[in-house]
Length: 463
Image 1 (cartoon, rainbow, N blue to C red):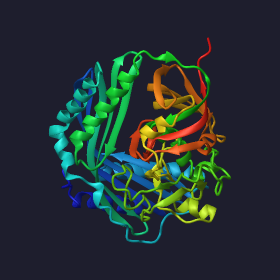
Image 2 (image 1 turned 90 degrees about the vertical axis):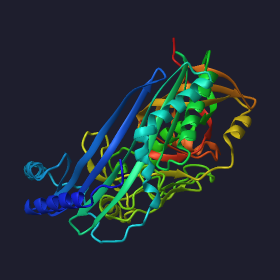
Image 3 (image 1 turned 30 degrees about the horizontal axis):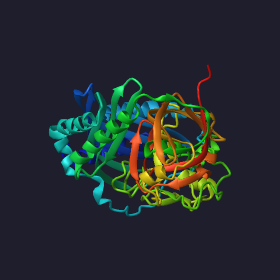
Image 4 (image 1 turned 45 degrees about the vertical axis):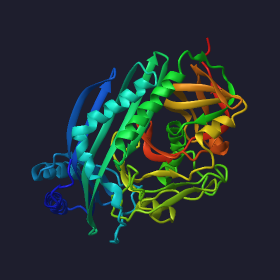
């Protein structure tokens, strides 16, 4: 857990990998090595269940030969294992068709920016005091009326080392923490809150606030009424907004438009939302869990505006997508799994950052005079038409009916069934309560506030 990894070990391993790849006759390659540790503290029924440790020792390799490509992931790499995997890859590539989506990788060597806040040396202390902080969160939830509390705290640190066939070499250290906590009062009354970042200042207070927020939501959700289908304004917590609108920001990707997996095809330059909406991809945001000084091709990271004053102005790019579309790499190359079970070299977002709005969370509630639904958490977001952006998602945990500027009562058994593009265009209020969200329903770390959307379709089960 300490930032004392030997620089010689990754360097020796990458030198060995590079020599073996060159001997195998490849035209181009990327070799990226991760070394470090992850920890998990899991708790349920208000008690810690387990504390686990994993060592990170993984080599990722991208290979190119005669326009044919493949990607390897090698856990616990040794020279013998690397050589064996390369031989298998050579046979596979000879029998594979040329990759029409590959047009090249970064060839220039540029100095990457410095991001000083990627690593917090206090992360190692969570091995000793992480459990104490978990119990602070549990106690805070119980004090708000919760009967039981469950969740997980992850933390860790690693060194990422990169080498490419075009001469780039670099490495950086990064640490993180990520907590999810659910509080329960009854079988139909629960609340959730999240916490993630790198900087451990006031970590105990942050964990207490997570427990307090989850416990408060759970207590407010007691005795829910069955929701009624209809058209409502909808208030999305940062957790929910990060999931729903993350489907749009992640889709600002030329590869996904080519593959028919993006609702943003032919939308570049279009007005997607109100003028108050500005979103950018920011890998230089040190607290962001996907912050990095360079991408997997060695291209320096940069801030890329995606939506400016409501208008879609950019996609993220790597070298190949930039060449194929006549653009320029934005430093967003990564090894990405788009759902097929294997990774490819592709552009992808890093940290999504929303410009704060003008409203507090309380003001958004207070200004909700007409029937409004406040969704604090959601899951099972599914598309009926990905190209059009038609989807549905199931609210969970605290779900509330709001009218006349106040939360009136909790509700249950409804679904949000709408269209991503229509919802973004119907944003009417953006909060200033920006927080980072990243969990299993929000793949890309997203700094997002509470958002209110007009005239959304709420459906309910039919008898």
